[in-house]
Length: 193
Length: 193
DNA sequence: AAAAACCGTTGACATATATCAACGGTTTTT
DNA sequence: AAAAACCGTTGATATATGTCAACGGTTTTT
Image 1 (cartoon, protein in one colour):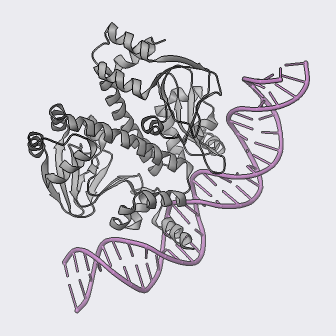
Image 2 (cartoon, each protein chain N blue to C red; image 1 turned 180 degrees about the vertical axis):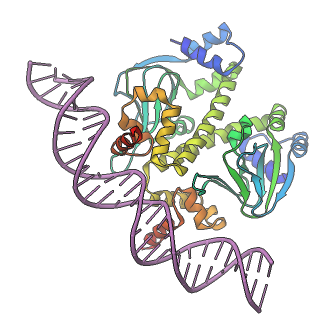
Image 3 (spheres, rainbow over the protein chains, first blue to last red; image 1 turned 90 degrees about the vertical axis):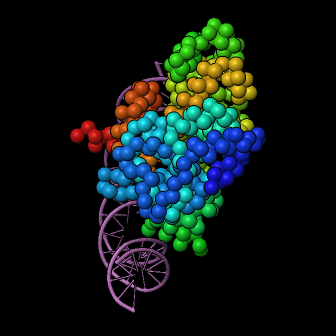
């Protein structure tokens, strides 16, 4: 199970992990299974763990005043599930994260992660690169939201995240694009022509 | 002029900069003045420098197929102006950055910055914290765009960025919220009642 | 096997926001 | 000092998207 995490880390750094390092990691990351529809994080709670997904699918969403759900992230294998604000500041989260499929996770607390990073340089490098890519991806998503129509945003989504199309129903994808399922249905109908 | 940068860095790290470190920084960051309306970065160019603003105001925006401008960032003193994607990947930028007021900057290339970070631990810490806060701010902005009406987004903007209200005209603020100047004008009229 | 929940689609209608054009007032440029 | 550019506002109208309700088909639960 930890094997997936090792290869993930090795993708980010040229230097392969030593077996001592692997032992430290195996020890620090605790496996957890959660069933479809179970919560990993609920609004108001503090996000104590970040979870590396080795199998399954999850979603992160907020709930507005009227009770509507808004998907902010979809996750599958090799994604990290957490609310970064709550995880780093230890403040109550505004989000919910739950399992869309039965999911296997590897969990670690922030304190343990910081601890590990002091011992394993590859992890520091990994986090730096993840932050960098994340910042770039966020910038793109923001610009897309400001500049593009719903139709174009969907096209970009199909291009950039084809894996998600097979794992999540359309109404979740619509929500993550900031539109309703009906609007997405109509956009797709148009596109076929 | 570099004094502003020193205090900025010291805000992020408990350890004050030594005078040797200050000398290194002064040497690596090159001062530059740019006049109102001048470009700091143009679409298609590579963002060679990141600029720390010691005085003035700037804006970053993209241009859509129809020629419309979409503000993605507004900057004033103590902000860093750059296109992160282009700056880190050395790819052509999709954005323009220009000066809204006459502006004083301190410039540094990515290579020089990485070099400095090897010599000055405080800088590594600063970048880490900046990335962290940035990621959190982006998450909030994204969620706000997905979940809130234009009116609520404007209220949040007024609350979180009151300084900008005095430095930028309404049509730029509207654009940064993803709405037209007319819509913002009507929202404000409503709000007064 | 039956019942319930879920999913995508469609139609009718409502709403938020964009677009276009015009105006007076201010600031900047010439 | 005159001209031009810029800014915020307003009205009329257009457009994209949301809301609500209903449907048949599928999957999940009982």
